[in-house]
Length: 477
Image (cartoon, rainbow, N blue to C red):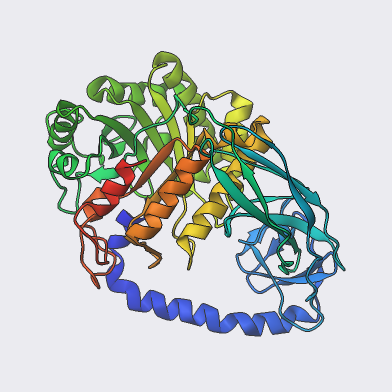
């Protein structure tokens, strides 16, 4: 979680704001300087912010510096490119999809099909809506909406989109009713477990929170290196005998369970310090033996683990050993995301876990700190991107992919001032439940207290809310 490292930089906010303003002011000039010289997009090319390319007859402006790779064509990665609004751009929307129809139902899913749209340049995909809310995307003319309730009617429409971001009118609506039967169950589902951090932020007594909210599980953060390949809470508190063990004992005494999180955004981590997968697995085993968690969560972030592929592989190979030695302990990897799904490092992590045969129970994304103005829709879009990445890597169905997915949000104000209200978090929880996701967490219980206008701080959310309101919502997962 980035929040810990950013707390110490809050006094520099004015400088950061001025820097950001300067970057924003400079972008149009850079765009204007290169627009007339736009070349066709190409893979394995370094692009700076403001660079302009053409692809399939449409112009795109680079919004995040990167080196392109095959499959990163501008319409496929809106986190990197946006359609240019300059002269000559494509402004024609695709035709409306026709003959939307239901092709099958089960007790928990509805399958849809429709006739293809046409476009002056080309249709790149379709947005699928249930009851007016977008629930997924498709590149072809079929879609299956899963995680639904039995004996329930659902109404759908579809819109086509093109590479320039133009969207068609809505198709005809179709209503389908799922069959009767028990609601879908998933033995891999974990209890909602918000992060609890005993290192700062006036940590509350978890027993008090459990009594007030009904939550039964917490994700305890963070296990780091205390020197070399030796684990400790936050890198400096012993595994047993301190505040962390006392909190865990309280949780378990009230019938709850714990997830233990390794890593995070900042600090000295085990991944870079343990020299081999076996050494990393041995360090994790020390924590499992000391704490007895139901889940071990590996928060793989930043350049030292997420972007260092030698360390990524060391962690992944270590997790194979951990799972072999602890088959009843679930293994989770948690990592950042763009608004449309995992970035190149996240895709690599997923694909490599498949290539190495790592039995990961859940892939959790952190859909925040990417400049969102609609955290619900961006969370859904990012999750759908994760689903597609898992399907591509493993050949899973939608339902199989959802069953290996999790969301870890940030309550109230995020580091980038994105707003998640209790109502929005309820929406996210309900969407995750409807799709059959198996993990829900947020950062953090320490911040689950009101302080409207208080900003981004360690012991409250920065917004108006009730005490422990986000935890109460999470408990309903």
